[in-house]
Length: 416
Image 1 (cartoon, rainbow, N blue to C red):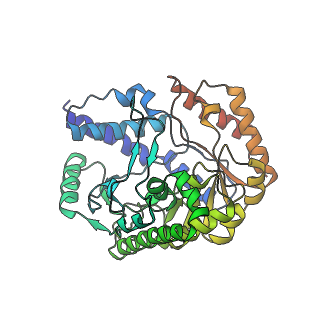
Image 2: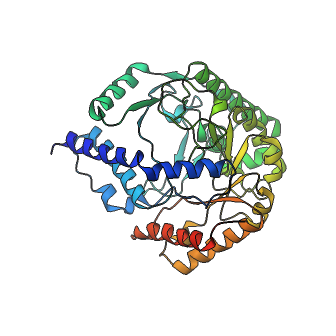
Image 3: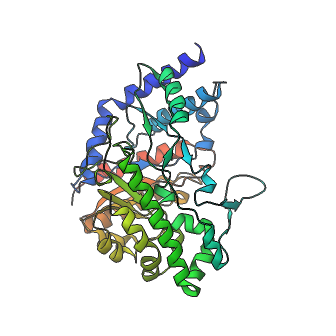
């Protein structure tokens, strides 16, 4: 079998999964769950230390383009084998090529850099702020939404040629200034450093307001342009889980533009985890709100502790539906505050769950405690395993984690 035929055989396996009864079960589960209907807790494995999974790294294709297909399809097949509730859709999405910015590090008009460890490109890194003096704010360039349609068409046509007759191919033209590039907080940290941001809130608040305002207006302008151009679709949305709910149209590969009001959005502010709720609201949420209030439903939070910020978040973001409850959050307090009005995306510590050995008793104890809190407060809870950087060379730990969670779900006969 040639390399192209091999890729097509993998695509056919993926198609079988994406159109299966099991996938429809998962779609219904997430749709009901995100619509605040009582369901068993969905399980979502967002990360699993892919570098330690042999079958994802022992690729056989020598052609660079086909090698990309191979890894992508093998990852879907591997994820499916974990037996969580992840949804895989029956189409292949190609990311558009953008004429602006010229490169990702130039997204605000000047090079954004970090200092990484010499021994590896992995691990922690240090911000190298480009905005230092007051006048440096003049370096900022207003972002624009501009797709390089010629280069995008080339990639699209090559992809269609390979997958012809198996998976439909769609082009994702949603703007560069989405998700992490749109939440203000992330790129503010890249340009100022976390410590710099925190000093600015006290030392030069007006200057920081000017920076945040420029970024918010720039992101909103780009997103408005993308919507006017018809570049949002029902497959260009994200909620750090599965983007289904009765309130919104389901993800689809159907042609046709979508309004942001028909889509999920994801937002966070990890960089301000140590900032008071009042300062977070003044310098971050105030500037996120004009961007994210345009969307139909909002998922908020990634790795930060939202315990003390929930009252403000609930008050200000009327489209809020999902909230992250991280290992650093006060689970009981978050559970009480969220009640049955929101989805609680519970994220146990990967360190305790899978990173340094799988201890079934420890995992089940943590899950039972979270479910007990959810039961007391009538939460809509799901279990998200994320930020798994290592499994100590034992990838089966993730599969065992899913099994253990399912056993706790089954024993609880999930009900309030």
